[in-house]
Image 1 (cartoon, rainbow, N blue to C red):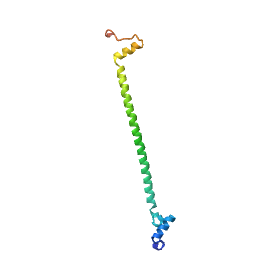
Image 2 (image 1 turned 45 degrees about the vertical axis):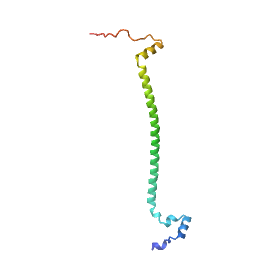
Image 3 (image 1 turned 90 degrees about the vertical axis):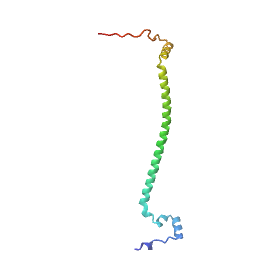
Image 4 (image 1 turned 135 degrees about the horizontal axis):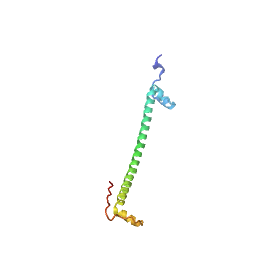
Length: 115
């Protein structure tokens, strides 16, 4: 059988008719390339999916950077408060305000040796 005999000649009239009827892909013999087209389509979908996931991860990273900066400021404030509360004068002042009779020792501590 002759393939050329069964195939229509590509004229402007046949191209327009095949476009209107939806047979342009068959006229251009694209049907034999279908596995490759499907493979490229799948690669495109995978590419779009991976780009979407990367973008979502970058959004999370940026949000977490802002949260981390807030926590750094919070940590610095708490460290300052902790150091401030650790001074002897501040502790004595807080004890006086609380009505406690505990004060700093007047004489130094003595060491007891047990032999």
